[in-house]
Image (cartoon, rainbow, N blue to C red; front, side, top):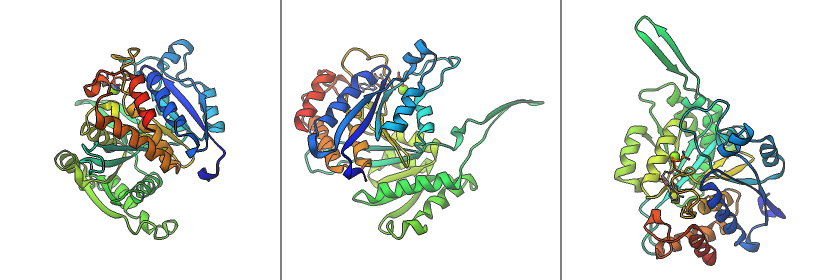
Length: 352
Ligand code: ATP
Ligand code: MG
């Protein structure tokens, strides 16, 4: 098990733009934990759009093989997306999710309470299915007598819905409220969303669940009203689980509730691997200026550790980040401060 490991091998893939400035901060936060986790060993790995412009591949085989064969987990920075389609280029993060079968994207969205110990107004987790739905990208364009006709296939399988459901129940079980909301639109899409809804709801009754999810309260919400309620009364949500497209939209909408993109972490998780990733992109407008907010990456490291079962270490990192935000005197410009990336990192490390 994770807890009995001698060392923790962590792949670091800073990739492009501010990824190179914030991933070192996440690494240092893990190092600052000292002996409360197995000794971390970091392996620097290459990927990204800039790498592609030099070597015509955005994801070298060596990176994938090292992750598969040597690493327990990884931290990914961010990739620049070219504004126009570039022949031969495809996103390395999308490829990594596929190759490592990271079928869940998990994004906690938490506001920081003004006082220590106070309840934050927004405290929810979006669990997004990451392999199918409309994003299987099976699109066709045909000419008909009435003009062009475009179609897209939406794939929902029982297998993918079941495993994302299991991940979501686990996430809910690990939280205080133990409340799970299934997001769907099965009043309109009764077959696809109907299958998703039914499959997720049936997880507690699976033999392998053996009653462990009995304490999780399950609710459901149509996706449109879920977005409405998310903005009006975010406190009603604890864990939300959704198919890929709705999950994509809801997780960005939820992130907008807590201010800067520079604060929101995520993990990509599968049965055998987990990869932390800040939600923001490569932010070319601020790259290279040492003003990127490192807190999303630092929180991604905590989330990755929590997923691996090191919740004490994760708590120490999260508490340090909360404290730095609450004090408010050492923050990057996106949060209204004047400090540099490394100053904010140092402030977090001191508190860890
Ligand atoms: P990409 O194509 O890589 O996603 P983008 O131009 O969409 O790049 P994002 O990284 O998505 O940029 O960021 C959107 C905005 O939020 C930018 O103005 C960026 O500067 C800001 N931003 C994103 N991440 C951070 C961060 N960690 N710290 C400060 N500002 C950030
Ligand atoms: Mg972006």
